[in-house]
Image 1 (cartoon, one colour):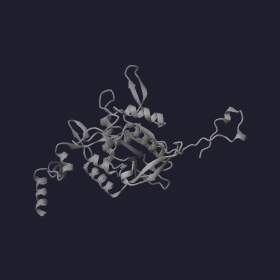
Image 2 (cartoon, one colour; image 1 turned 90 degrees about the vertical axis):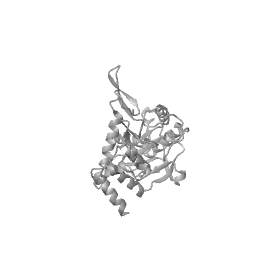
Image 3 (cartoon, one colour; image 1 turned 30 degrees about the horizontal axis):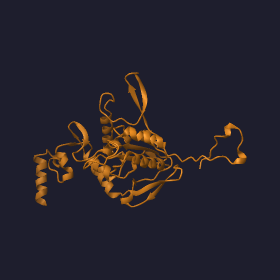
Image 4 (cartoon, helix red, strand yellow; image 1 turned 180 degrees about the vertical axis):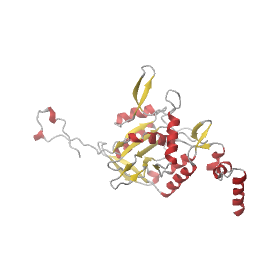
Length: 315
């Protein structure tokens, strides 16, 4: 109504020092934005609005991923949203580079409480230039369907299927309470696990250790703040192509409160932390690899030469 518009303009002019964003914080129009009155948003409001609008215009492919008998190939099978284990916005592309980020929930089995912690598994594609000279931004291309609250072994299995589907992409799991359980099971499945270089104060040397460590204590030099600030820059400059509505929602409810960047009360930030880890390490994405099938040589070609014993054919 005209009266409401006049009131809004008056408040922006007289109470908010001509700042519309300040008005939105002080006079929220819906429950989802009420947190702005008590917490400062981490990410640029205009960028968040753009990502939310992009998510409304694009629906993902819903599907499952089936393995062949010897679990060397993974095939996408479309299905309805209610049956989907995965959301996909872009199928694997030969020559592109991918990485998978896993932020496991705290504890191995998240089945208790009214709103328990969630797992987040995101597949990111590195930016590239195609044969026509066109630049393509980094993109969130797939994910485990949210919200994900399953035992760790199920999470490992689903991640393994994405790992195969995107050419045995490197996997970066966060090392929290259940991170070690995930890593041990993932290694048993044959997944490529990312390694961090960690300084050992006893030996004075750096050592390679599995998984990403998200913390802001002195031992790790403020890594959490670093990756969150990095993601804020990526989003502000629109350097990421992301049409996932679940991620966009968490962008809008990620605030600074009690001196820490975290989810607003009653919200979650699993996707945000996974995305921050992934974009910080996007240059370590691995090129899509074609599956290699090792076949034995025909009987009449076999001999006792040990050099022939390792011959293989690429299918």
